[in-house]
Image (cartoon, rainbow, N blue to C red; front, side, top):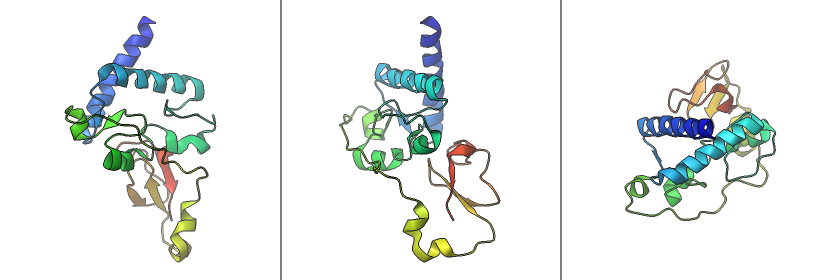
Length: 164
């Protein structure tokens, strides 16, 4: 238990630094945020990836990729509701305790559709290089393969999807 508490505390401190350096904030209720970090670490042991502790995992990384923390819905949730679905990440007002986090509806579609279907004719254009999109922050790059890490949010290579 002591090792778990130490690992949670270290991971929490690392996440606070990473979030702040990227312009984000973790929930100011440190105990609440540490419980979420504990859930992330537990899911990493179970599934091999940081699946959001507030949602059910399929145990298939490809099906769950949009729910790996930080999830694909974080920024939209922050803009619209002030917090992400699990409230690990919060906006400035909540971080300063000027506003409280409230419950938000599930944004994830029941069935994820291939984004190229939404692009219409643009998706049929022949490009010199494939375009890769970071599913965390939306960064786009045109190259043979995705970068090892996103230069914007530092998400790993596996968080990129073929966009065009």
